Image (tube, rainbow, N blue to C red; front, side, top):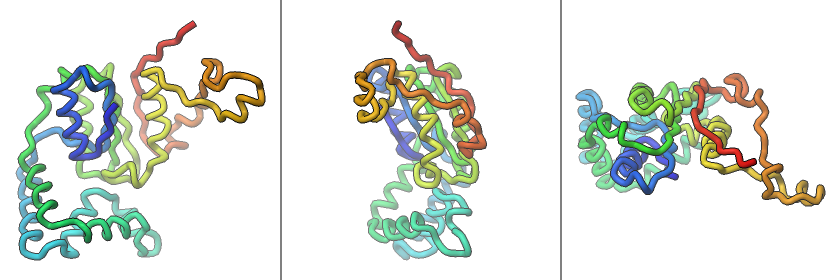
Amino acid sequence: MCFGVTAGAYILTLFAMKYRERVLGLILVSPICKAPSWTEWLYNKVLMNLLYFYGMCGVLKECLLQRYFSKELRCGMHGAESDIIQACRRLLDERQSLNVMRFLHAINERHDLTEGFKKLQCKTLIFVGDCSPFHAESLYMSTKMDRKGCALVEVQACGSLVTEEHPYAMVVPIELFLMGFGFYRQKHFASSSSNGSNPASPSNRSCIAPELLSPESLGIKLKPIKTRVDIVI
């Protein structure tokens, strides 16, 4: 099982194409799958020039934050920055400019993966924020993959890093996705032992209330997750 975000999702998708027998499932967050457009290529070139001449300056930080976080999170309440943004700024200060330049160069040199989507044999779950600059690319990826094995979850008012902005919106879709592989969340051991039952028994497999799957409760636009669960009688 592989879990990747943006460029990491691209790498893991490429890995799943080359080593199909090693990957059972992909969980991708705001994945990129096509070669960069000329606007993205030029934008990354500008960022690399900023890094070369000025290092990790304030303008560059803002550009990177816009790429990964929504405007709501960046601005915060009453103009105050959230803890996530402040932590991200500190992490950017610790990064070496040369390594960030190499990362941006690698993104600019990526190839289109579309032709290999049909070769994927694993099931795929895609998360993407509707404010992400990679939103259109994630939608494109979901339409080009096998519909029987791919599900798309669009998270409202969220940037590229769904894992940081709205992690709770990912819980139920991931749980349902893992159920397709026979994984089930066990009930708490104390409650199971008090009933004198085995916590690992099939009767103790947790059930998900239908109302938890509504877009209103999740804060997401959830499309059906097409996975099959093998039930042993």
